[in-house]
Image (cartoon, rainbow over all chains, first blue to last red; front, side, top):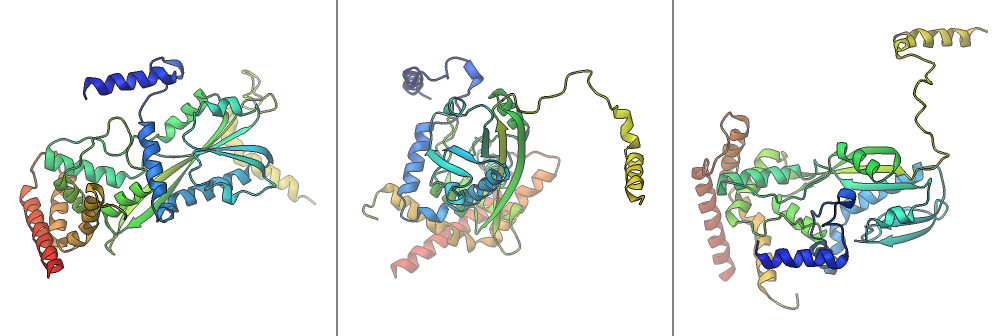
Length: 284
Length: 74
């Protein structure tokens, strides 16, 4: 990388007053956000852009399900990273009275905006996403070029999500995993659909070149290693859904040390306790 | 498409890729099997370990391209 690019990036950081030089919050600058903004704008300018919405529609409806699961009405909600508002179309006015939508906005907004005892429900792609594409490209580059560079963004592991939410100050965390598998005719269709969704790689460490030989090799490997009987290839999207609550006094807190009145040793007697309980209930 | 630039032309070329690769499914499967076998075996995958299978695949692919453009011209 040339000196000019590095110094430009440092200037941009200083100008925005962004946290990449200070260690406040430990935020890492992994993604080129201006590149991502350009990719998303290009994707939305396509004539057939709604052809690529299937993943976002699915995740939006599953996330709206989780909003309904929280037994509360929300006078005001904020949708960060809304895209084409895939969540809004599934919400109704009784649950969410007013909804604001934003995209590529400053994520520190969440903490300032969220009132105490309010919920943050999110969805992110997990580490198993597109592992077939990642492995095929890796093997092809190893065999053809002798080394490999990352072509897929780094994704969050489930185990890290708990830490991330805890560090952000949320309590009573719930994390669950959903896997959506989509079948495509081949590797190139996977890649062109990702491009159409505006999800091309924008990490700073991305390699800007993919050789023709490597593409050919990777397509062959993908089909051979992961292909189905009917000739299609699967692509996995692992979505992590997380729910976190801003702390408030009314929420359940962990009990004080030493306040336990039942011992773990009694766990072995739990089946006996259950049968005793049943007997007392069966007595007329 | 209003304008024809290098990006639209290269994207149009890439759209032909799956159709051309489908004509070389045998060679592609052989190359894929060669690479997949290294993942299970003890030896690690190094450069040009499956070069024979890849050269067969590449020449099949190139002849498919020539055949396609001959058909388009006529």
